[in-house]
Image (cartoon, rainbow, N blue to C red; front, top):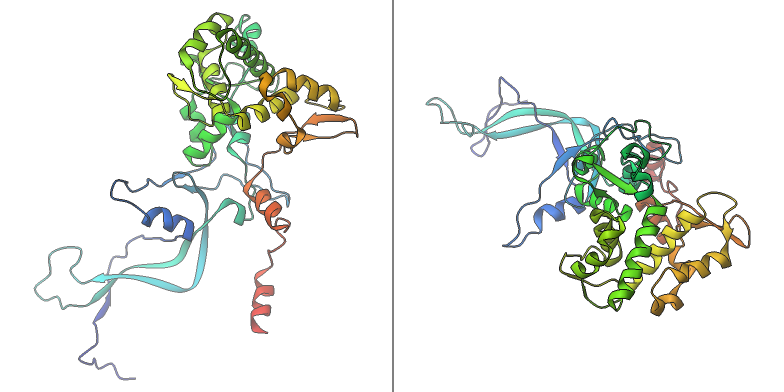
Length: 371
């Protein structure tokens, strides 16, 4: 074979010292995040996380554990990192002299500075084979439980539930987020769903259902005393001034209002949303009244649920509002069930395809492609 160069050829060479580069394949969803920008926006920050030592990796229905593999996080997205071997090595080249001033005897051309035999593939959580968990599930495990002012009177240790292994353990919100292998904004969603709060040096807590229900009862009573019309804007400070002496932590008060206002909450004005408030009250009440079998009579639960919502919203109470939060041990009873709607389950519900039903071994895909 002739090695003579034509007048249009580009000289190519290999650098003596190869650089340790790794290629990252960007999925369309992440590419959109990186490329769709406006003049007023800044480039998003990407960072790598993994489950901390205090978190238990979830196990999928197939029995596959997520282990403690690294994930790549964008502001509101999390991608599993997977190393993929390529059949052909990929050379990364740059123009000769691009790394510094050109050498006198250096000819124009390309020089390979790295050889990549593997690439990093990014998979959205619901597309991988590993188990995935919602941020609420991780934070439930990480945060100690606040049982209410009655338990607080006996000391901070009594504020923890019986399942907490180390009653003296304190964890901040930042440390908890660092241990969750999901983006910070997804963690913030879980924090808001739990009505979690920090208490200064005492650390972060997630309130038990009973503590939430008791605090909500105080908020509802205070709103009646202040003549607050639910669904309309009201002064948050005025409402807090009424219940400040009821031993409700300010962080818990804020957390409840954020949960029922969709996060659009400031210390000056806010408006409670009916579509968020009524389901939230029903979920909390059911978790408190019927956390275990045999549950509670459905009719009794519905009547009590109506008593815990503003009078003008009682007609909106319906089991359909908490359909992912309960199970029915019998035809007349109901029981709380913590089962967040994961991306995998949401996709299956929307398409009618069972999770994993579309997955096939590589040789089956190859066989189909040859027909």
